[in-house]
Length: 78
Ligand code: SF4
Ligand code: SF4
Image (cartoon, rainbow, N blue to C red; front, side):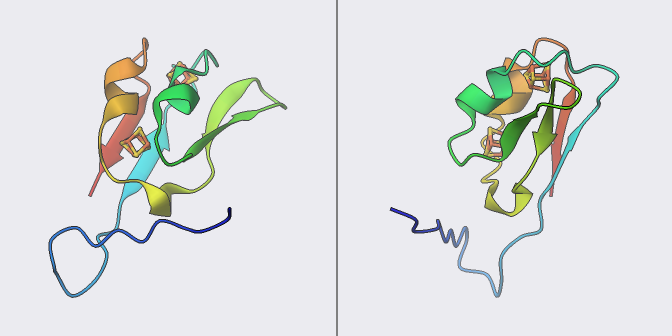
């Protein structure tokens, strides 16, 4: 299954722009954000052992990652 989510939030004219940012100074690579994100926005970067944003366009702004991150390293904004 490779179908992509195509979320249309509020019947607007287009999809909202979402920005997901990880503060790498705070991230310790615990992977919690990767586990909780329902749409696979994050992956573990094997080079520096920290999370990285790979598909922020999929973000549905559920804020699970923001809540889950023990270091308050993630910012999600529209
Ligand atoms: S939950 Fe926070 S500390 Fe853990 S990998 Fe994600 S951004 Fe890094
Ligand atoms: S707000 Fe939700 S959908 Fe967006 S990156 Fe965080 S966990 Fe994933």
